Image (cartoon, rainbow, N blue to C red; front, side):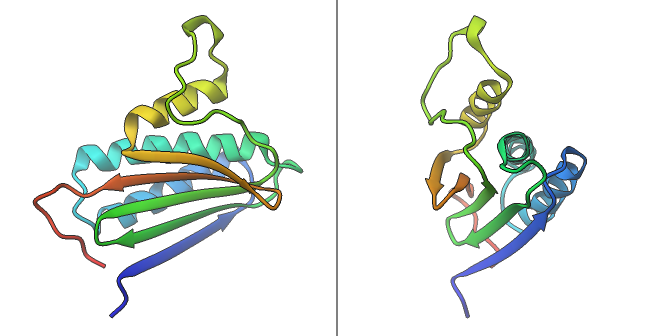
Length: 141
């Protein structure tokens, strides 16, 4: 039996389709032991990451890929798009009067998930999110 499960969703980079990515991640998260509160936080974070992917993809409307990796410790979600994306990194606290839309999205992500990063690789931008399961539970893999 594998120690993880991967679910992949690819959609055209259109803002109208971000809700499908959020609902897909929600459905996967509900099959784990994440709490309802964690699932809601993750849905918001995924929405913000997908908005960033759509906004900064190159060329516009190129595909956005969402990969969910369910393992024994956490649910990982990777949002990938082709393009430059934003350069904000975890732990950056923007000045309140200097918040751009993308910075506000990363600020929210930073406060909603347990771990996140932004990685550029071969012309792709990955926003990686992780939500750990509560300590007293086991996941369905």
